Image 1 (spheres, one colour):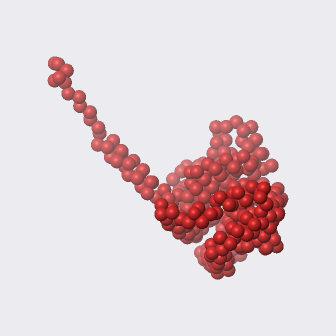
Image 2 (spheres, one colour):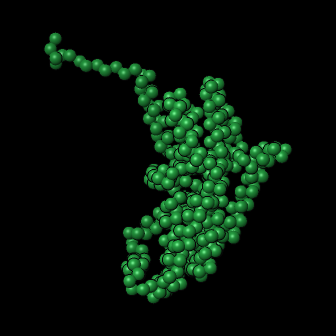
Length: 352
């Protein structure tokens, strides 16, 4: 028989075809719902933090479902209070600043010495030609507005997810762990219990430090008569969520606004911001977090950059408590694969 008469037949079982199709469907579904992943992670962190006050209410003989209702109402009223008291002020400050940009620019330049490096930067980057949106930039501005609206949508979604997880979280953990062996169920329960301490410390501690950062910035900027102090203080409180990077991003606009007061005021703002940053890092944070959140500066900086590149702001917010929880996960799940000295050393470093 010649090669021309030979036929090559490839038989693929129907089960293999079905498996490939199922994998493709799963990948497509995962791609569609992937935007929900980070909001869900942040919602889990929030729900874990809220478990403590809920547990306190349950200990006071309040039924769990009523406790969830009380916490939900408290959160909703807190958000409403912030919206009513702070948002209008910030909005008015923003509108006033936008109207005063030419005057604001001239006042800053007149207060800066000719050898001040800020003068050249402000002079070249705040001209009318630079600030006036070009035709091709309109889409970018609209896109930025859509991103902001999307951010508010994500916040609402996180709030809803967190409430549902708070109400049904323990039942969901038991439902999932039922598929595993008793030994694995014990590990899941231990992991959830110990990591919840880290996550709770992070969320509650971050809320406290953000509020303190807002109060400090507002007090300093108002004392120095810096314009748009409430707007800058809100920015400082929000950016306090991002260690290291948040400080750098917050201090730059504060210095620019302070330049309207005098040529020395920006450096006073910078010095006071640095002082508070040091106090927060070496006094306030250790007092609030205790031994629950111990990460080196390099680990914090690297994980923030990496998570920010992968998941944006939401990724940067969610990554730190997860990284801080790693020694717990290592101790519970990897103890049989790693040397005892490794587990002990990592746990010891985390508790220093």
